[in-house]
Image 1 (spheres, rainbow, N blue to C red):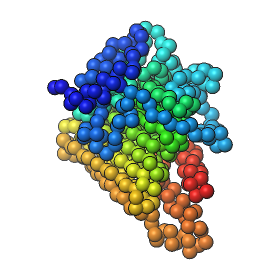
Image 2 (tube, one colour; image 1 turned 30 degrees about the vertical axis):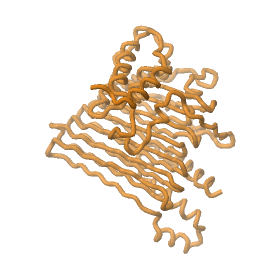
Image 3 (spheres, rainbow, N blue to C red; image 1 turned 60 degrees about the horizontal axis):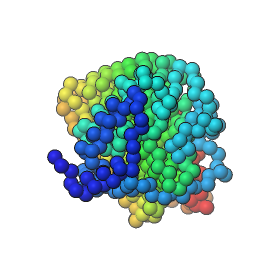
Image 4 (tube, helix red, strand yellow; image 1 turned 135 degrees about the horizontal axis):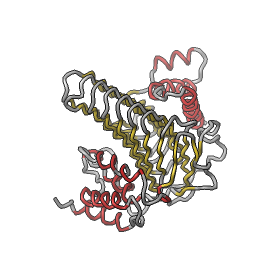
Length: 426
């Protein structure tokens, strides 16, 4: 079926500005992804899963300009933690700023520099391809086709320390496309931290294959550059008795779309996906999540909190699909917004689709103003209104932050939130 003319033109214009990386083991996957993009077309405002978020600036041939925010007076996120640091500046690997890619229990290579025979050949683009059904995700396919760099991470044991991916924004019109592949083998365990704004426009895909009995923990802090735009995709496949946990904190950014697509294929797997965002003014933040239960006795949790003010917009689209035979499924989904004025809005589309009869699944979504009773209680005890609102805001997002397994990282996240709130009041 031919694409509508408007979508065809937008797709052709964007593709004309890009070129497939030369040769290598990833070439067949890239060519297949390009074919998918051409067949699907890039997203438009009439697409069902884009009706709340306008994609034009994410699909334009050139990245819109985004001023670089000076954060030199702030302590680096996760800067006090013992990690292996890998730095990308506007999507380009910086060897000078990165540590040696050596980590006990983990092999790390760059996508741009790997040999023609490589373990990732069987995984690159595979989870992204599977994630195109039943919902098309053309920006992810575009990434698979044209990603210029990224990391190929193979976890064979318990990593000796976290891997910290640092994304720096240096040019006003930078346009970065990165693709990471993570294979956590049986019994392996890895924590990945991500921080920074990355580029004026950022398209990132991370594919994570978690084998039986393995664990993957992910904490991301998307940087404070207000004018940046980002579209990220996290695809995961979980084996028997495996664990997958991810949390994202987003502060600022004129447009952010974070998609997470997870398939639980092994019995007794556990998947927790959480996020918190705080936006001001022309801030638009979209979390789109799709979890498929295709095994017995698995647990999934989706916990999302958004704090919005001065006309900011938050979007949540979350679905739990329970396949036939996926008995004993425990699926939980909650999305809530705290609207600090009457100009902001929260748009939610929670979904359950269940084809098994022995399950415990629930979803809920609420929006509301700050708790006046709580505010009165704190004011009556000498707390200023601004500080009282900050305390109630931190308490509001606490359920999402508590999904982070490491309590010291929880404390750091709360500290980042408190610092942002303090700057806002200042």
